[in-house]
Length: 89
Image (cartoon, rainbow, N blue to C red; front, side, top):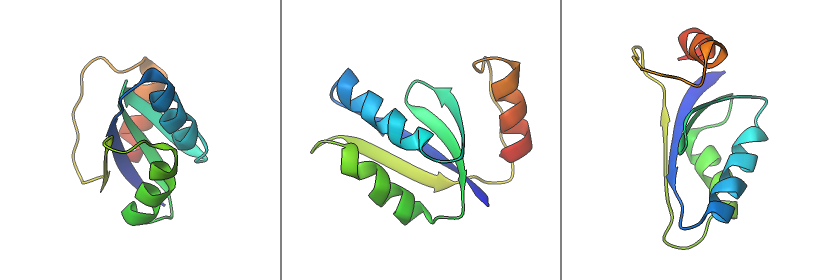
């Protein structure tokens, strides 16, 4: 499995919640901040994009990238999230 970073910009809170629910449908996920999540999957970036855009409205933005080899952060949503990111990024 690979780790992907998914960032998104939505026009409404309702749309944002739909995107989050779609990301939660992946077995392994971790919120990084309000509009950025990490997921583990065997799918490609294009497949993830195609799945998420099914719940997005015209004009909303989405970016999916496979995680690289290095990362740094500040103030995650707690130790569990920080540990998840350390392990999977």
